[in-house]
Length: 227
Length: 265
Image 1 (tube, each protein chain N blue to C red):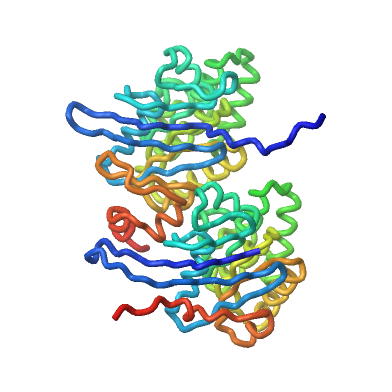
Image 2: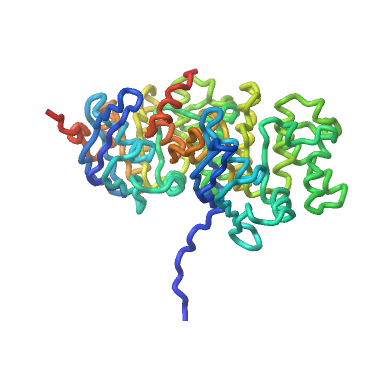
């Protein structure tokens, strides 16, 4: 489902004398449907960078990033938008929403944007919010004023609302209590059972051991230092 | 005999080619080309004087262009160059499939006509004649932009800045346009009103499948509203791409400067 081939990345800092900082080279791996692959490596090794490249949020300098039949590394913006709408989900560590939009609508939005009828989308959103223990009294409020943990759970609910064939999870269990952590791990297991290809970053080692089928050490893709 | 079915190639709603505009010897904007597809929202960002408003006004036919083409996928005749189309045709287009939301609501409203009249006028311009229908549609649209029905007969001069801006949006969208040009739609509004307007615009874009071109210098606005971004500097397009990619991984020196200059809240 996801196929990376010889992917590389560097940052050019024009405001610091056009310094070029290579951060990744030769990244190659596959993720099959129903498989969960965990990215590991020290902080700064490039786990989040790689994930952002797969999502099309960061540009790649070379290589191929196939998600389904779209090469994210070379696709047009509208192809990536279509891919993100239907095929590729991403649960980041931050919730970014339009102020004033009620939580239930924030969660239902990915479904609405693929044309799911309003009632179905909202029912699914309410179900997920309930599973993630967001008190019903908060559903009609904007999540911008919620606590960090609540925002993270709203973000997860939103990420799992639509059934994407491929998903990227950046620390989905961070800052969650035991009950909610269990719910999120169950959601991931359910997604795998449905054949979703997942790439995740989990600092929580027991969680990783439970849901991940394989580990990929991102520091293997660190570019060789010039001498 | 069954014909081979091939997926249709997507036709852009708007196809802009090599727009060039100078003011005397000064470049307004130059070398601008892009395609906008149905349902897409494109943001144009850049500092004051970068040519973004000039470009928007060229595209909308408000100011003459030195050279270039602006092809629009019309309902009846397909892609047509709007820059060479006859004046009546262009005016018809501006009243039906196009809409233009000005930064200052008073530029887009008739200040001496009631709120309901402002909305109804555009309907009448495309042939609506039944008073009851026009009034009902005006009420519906004022509701959508959150203006109470009992303010319908007030003139926009009696409205706050945010209400005037919402009224301008209602007036523009009532005829169900397919392409909306917006020039700093949230400029000059305080933040709570801005948030409300952003929420409204996003909902309308999704429900009506609108395409839009939004000129702004506010990067937070484009992050929430635009799918794609075009960054302009001194009349030139210096970078284009997916909105979050341009903002999170800017490639051009100017974009890097622009993004890093935003104050963190």
